[in-house]
Length: 339
Ligand SMILES: NC(=O)c1ccc[n+]([C@@H]2O[C@H](COP(=O)([O-])OP(=O)(O)OC[C@H]3O[C@@H](n4cnc5c(N)ncnc54)[C@H](O)[C@@H]3O)[C@@H](O)[C@H]2O)c1
Image 1 (tube, rainbow, N blue to C red):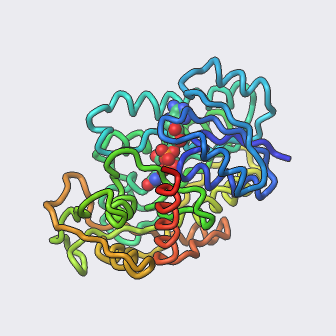
Image 2 (cartoon, rainbow, N blue to C red; image 1 turned 90 degrees about the vertical axis):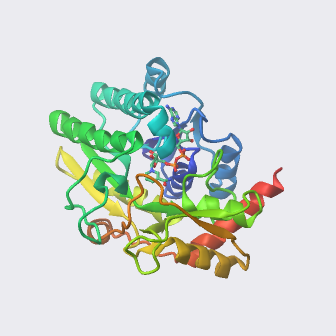
């Protein structure tokens, strides 16, 4: 049985991926400092997967604690989800973002180098493409330096990993997520937005449940069919499955140095208004909204060409927008039942 370190494994995408890893017979060790997650997620992972991963609650910047984990376990690979991810906050606290997202990454890579471990998967983002000149976006689309410090940590993280793979002959996979949405079908795992959500779907959900009075739609004068911004919304369980496939591919590679890059999206763009309509249809609830000024830094349109992931990983997003949004609503009801 292979042992995988999953950093940020109590977080939104991490917790879903841990379930998939456990169900595929990996031994999982989670390190998560709970800066954006809660302990009950660990219990819920066990309820869903029927197995409890090993869990260490500490900050990955603490090298000495990380060293102890690597001393205690024979680690075969890592999926590195741990990062701060709030775009707006990253503009106010850029140093915190660079320090957290990049020092953590480097600390793990140092252990990999020292112990001759390979197989590293990095959570990147479609933000590395900025406003691409063409849609859909494939992996050869030129990168543009993101405006936010958060986005820059993703682009820098990718560069660090390319250098790491090349210099030390390692296998890495850079997964560029488009817009992850939805919750586990059991309603036991999902996104825990702290404060006012940055992302559309948690905002829609909180508005439908009455936590927020109205959804703010940032601009309806974009050059898109209905004037609202278009994104590629990918269901989180589909996304989690892609990690297992990317890891299995890396582990099966014979060459010493591998740098895989995959877009993970559905290949379909949906506008903000289409998401609202889909949510209302799937859950039979109303989402009051207001049109506001465009938000600085938002791009008009981004959706993936994910053919490479299908070709090389045998992965394809399968879940519809309506179905993903139905799971989101079940998760919201679950969260409210816990209060
Ligand atoms: N959710 C998205 O829309 C999205 C899109 C593209 C990329 N990503 C990337 O995917 C990854 C996972 O995103 P998510 O939505 O699951 O985020 P999340 O905040 O739910 O999960 C991240 C987890 O990492 C933990 N963490 C953060 N810094 C840490 C540190 N220094 N030490 C230990 N634990 C730490 C947090 O407590 C949290 O549980 C992140 O790297 C994020 O940048 C997310």
